[in-house]
Image (cartoon, rainbow, N blue to C red; front, side, top):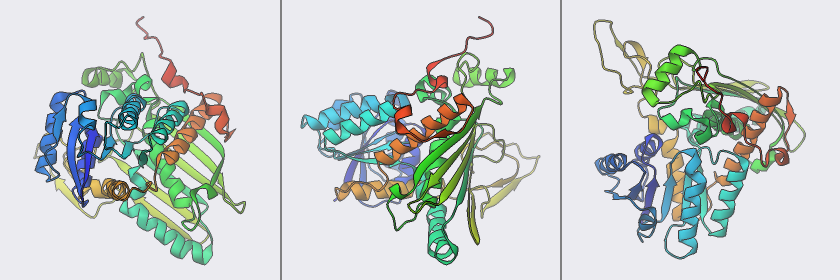
Length: 411
């Protein structure tokens, strides 16, 4: 039996998931809806080209959800639409008008805690399974790193006590990422969600429940270092029609989480995320330290590379690595980004979980905790100090960057 899935959203992340699904058994893409009809048609063509089925392109979400062959939805829309579409799907299922039994949502779960909790309430009321699409904990390198840490390092010298993770690139693809009132923030909410969950995953004892690692304190610094400068703000205006001077967001974030494990050990996680990195392209790096061992991951230290001399002028592309910044010189090549970045692993897990009617191991409660940690990070940055982790204090919190815009200097 194959799982019939539909995509709500047909953009950058949705297409990464298509490439990830190529290596997954027992799945077929049956439908797609997005607010951009041409994008939906391109997505459907790519799905057919990849052998994943020829999905029907819908202009009405309810009609798509009523297709009896659709059993699950991949929600890959902008952050401000997560709650809206969760309500719609949950209502269709609750009214018996849909065969959907599970929703997988792209990170972050929501823009704030209130939205995240409402999303969980809705899906649980409708009896839906829910998966949180955090690709980095499914990266083969991260999975193998965790095995090495806990099966050899921790077993022979003690648990890891420090993890550092960074995600850095030169800025998002789509205009909505640059608008904090839509996305919920800047680089922190866009990418720190990845690094927080990757470090938590690596630092958690696999023989124990995730709750064995409890957040104690959060400290964060956020800044706008590059994209508010006149030259780069003009570039954003030309490319994305975004007025970053009027509605700025942080393009750099440092977040430090202090955890305590179930026997009282203090554990540290340091994360750095940036839209300011100029290099070959997207760089994901992770380092874990234990008493007598360390583990390192860097996606730009590739086993494959190419070199083009200055005498060759290639058109701009992302042929070699996501968010590629150059087309000459020595370039690393990521042989299969959907595999390397964990999309195939996470999609396989979601498909298998929904087919077996089991709650995915990475679900919306994990997404909720990450949203809570990010809201603490924003609160810490706004207050300029380390704060204690207390979910109640961010229950209704919305980061200043997401609720305000700064008047343009020309006004």
